[in-house]
Amino acid sequence: MDSLFSLSPEELTAVRLSLRVAVWATVVSLPFGILVATVLARGRFVGKALLDGFVHLPLVLPPVVTGYALLLLFGRNGPLGRFFAETFGIVFAFRWTGAALACAIMGFPLMVRAIRLSIEAIDRRLEDAAGTLGAAPAWVFAVVTLPLILPGIIAGMILSFARSLGEFGATITFVANIPGETQTLPTAIYTFTQVPGGDAGALRLSIVAVIVSMAALLAAEWLARRVGRQLGGT
Image 1: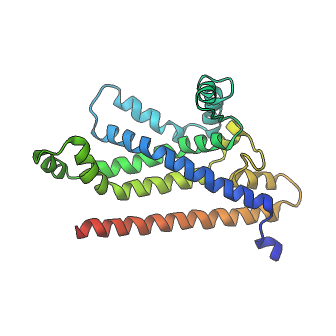
Image 2: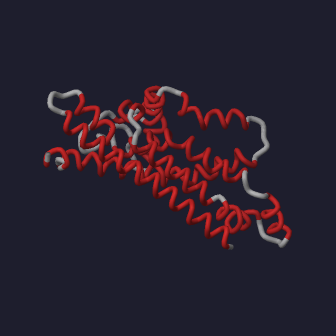
Image 3: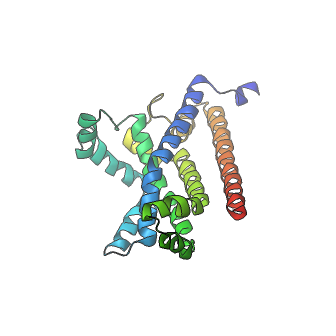
């Protein structure tokens, strides 16, 4: 019974790597998520439907296709992969950074959708009132729009985090399943299911995944309610 609830060093490494990848994927994609959500919610331009479809494409494509596209673009011989390696010294293929990139792309549509819905729900008269007082558009966004969409931002971040935590197909296609480097929770569970006697390890990591995901959802709900009460009080 003790072995069922005690994680091995390899399993702990997979858990820590999953959390690291999910956090980085969420944090790095957040500014782009806010920008794209704002453009889709407020923009009026030719090609908006195409942009919307492109953003949500990872939701409908097989994850393996997304992972293969990342391998072509961000691999060591890919145009973007070579650029980042030579310019910034960042290598994505078969590295944890590549896992974070894959997770960020897979969770990006969920983040954008949550933030976009919050932006579309804002009463534009509040922003117009700030504008008539002489505030610049950037200042209006910072002091009026951003606080109002904060619950949506929190929801989008949690959805992206949860999606990143459970990402499998794109990750294993792009960065493989290297213990200690790219082996996250889902790929570690998959590995355990493929070896004799690995059921206990798969069960332990599955329980960890459920606990972390549930904690993230509860935290999102609590933060959203708290922010909502604070905004309501103001």
